[in-house]
Amino acid sequence: MCGIVAVTGYKKALPLLINGLEKLEYRGYDSAGIAVINSESKSIVCNKSEGKLKNLISNLVDTDIPGTVGIGHTRWATHGKPEVKNAHPHIDNSGQVAVVQNGIIENYQELKIKLEKEGVVFNSDTDTEVIPHLIQKELFALSKLNLENNGSTLLVAVRNVISDLEGSYALAVLWAGAPDSLVVARRHAPLIIGLGEGEFICASDTPAISNFTKIILPLEDDEIALLTPLGIEIYDSDNERQYRNPIPLQITEQVLDKKHFRHYMLKEIYDQPETAKNWLEKYLIKDSKTGQFDIKYSFDTTFFESIERIEIVACGTSKHAAMVGSFLLEQFSGIPTNVFYASEFRYSPPPLLPNTLTIGVTQSGETADTIAAINMEIKRRSAIGDAKYKPNLVAITNRIESSIGRQITNIIDIGAGIEIGVAATKTFFAQLLSFYGLAIKFSQIKGSQSEKNIRQLISELTKLPPLVEELLEKHNQSSEKLAHDFFNIKDVIFLGRGINYPIALEGALKLKEISYIHAAGYPAGEMKHGPIALLDKKVPVISIATPGEVFDKVISNAQEAKARDSYLIGVAPECKGTEIFDYLMTIPSTNEWISPLLAIVPLQLLSYHIAAHRGLDVDQPRNLAKSVTVE
Ligand code: AGP
Figure 1 (cartoon, protein in one colour):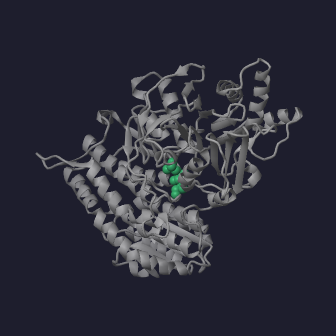
Figure 2 (figure 1 turned 60 degrees about the horizontal axis):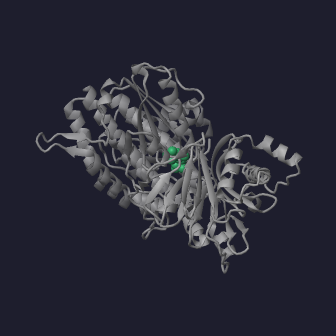
Figure 3 (figure 1 turned 135 degrees about the vertical axis):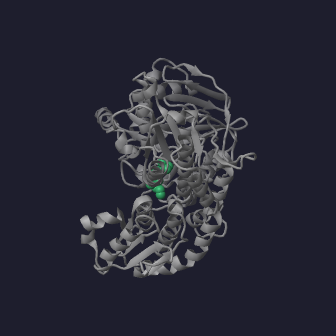
């Protein structure tokens, strides 16, 4: 989603801004822009462009702006189309104030109407544009008090304005009247200050900072900061100055290297054997004396003993991982578990029950709905004041330095390494592994599975790296060929049952996200209750059929599709029953519990090749963002 970069210091701002914006490109955006205070003319120079960052860069080729203070932005449209006029920065009518913002200003309409009545001319359709106009108005009012033109005055003006804003924001403000200063503020949207030598870089996400410094000061909610080359002043919402120590930027890998792959997504699909290996090494610890395996977390899990039920909040792909997790936690570990769309949970939470563990799953750690759902749960549980109802929290994330990582102590780091492709692949795989870890842990604590069964599951998990590698070998080229047959396809149905129903949902989501083909996933047994009406020879059906309790049922459901002339693709081992499929994407015949970790791989490859064959922007699909920081 939108990205912010802002700098102040002694080096030229423009190259730093462009470099920072390049590092945020992976988040998904539709326009970009920068504003720098020209240190000679003391005026704001702004340049914006529609589309990719390369368009902005080519606008600026041969442009040398003498100035060390600037702001930059990649925009993901919410209010107003992706056009130059709606790209950030937004400037007030005097040209003195420039603002970039992430988030949504919910009361912008009423503020806009008021400003228009006062004669302000709006040049965009965005919610953001009210902010520079309001700041300019405030600066004008402050000028009557004979305040000096400096960063402190800008700080007061911005503080007065944000107190009138409703919604969420991370923002960075420049004022030509204070040419060495930058004011930044946040509410429910991330913003991190990186501390360099005599300069500061502020950004909405760490990759924009990591080349610049490894020392950061994350801004907390409702804080505002003034940054000049001389230092930082941070204030909370009560205008109390905040003093705290910077922290190291905890980033294990920032290698934005595609290697020999055409797209990051394909590279990330190929990273999965390594993801499995890393997970096994990090979390599966063998006791040298007993030879027993244990799952090791960085936090004390003693409180798991009192847990009687689990609720999981997540969005998109993370929710699909959570659904597999819920299956494991209920069916393997015997703990009643419910999964909720975080966006639904926020407004219709279930009645509170005692001794509940709440798990938030988010690869980015910044998803606004997931964070808000967790916060709401903390609030309503804390309000009861009964130990049985207290919030017990765990977050599963790939970004321990993210908002959720800073907020929740009990973090399960999925450790997949940064994922650049907007469509989640290896982070989904690593989230699944985290749930296997939790299911093993809870089974051991609750004694809900025999040691033999637990040992068997662990042993299957240890075999994953070579199995996934084989799957990649086997299916990459064949999926590429199969992708040709999907050129004119408009709808695809994915079917799965039991533990693989969420894999059908994830297979459909992957295809939709990057190829723009309509796809829907269903529990195989539900097809005859409605979706079957869609089937004919133009609608392929992809069915996940793994040996186990529901295998025969899935095969019969596939028969029903075949009888309606659908082209049938099976994701299944070569075994009796699978001859029904017109095309078989074979997976190894393993223990059913671990089948989701295998079944997802050919589906990821097929989606990837269909999109690549269509010549689409696989890594940055239209309208999507890597981290969805608005509601
Ligand atoms: C994944 O391919 C999607 N881009 C999207 O559904 C994503 O999973 C969702 O927005 C949740 O993101 P999170 O894991 O960062 O919270």
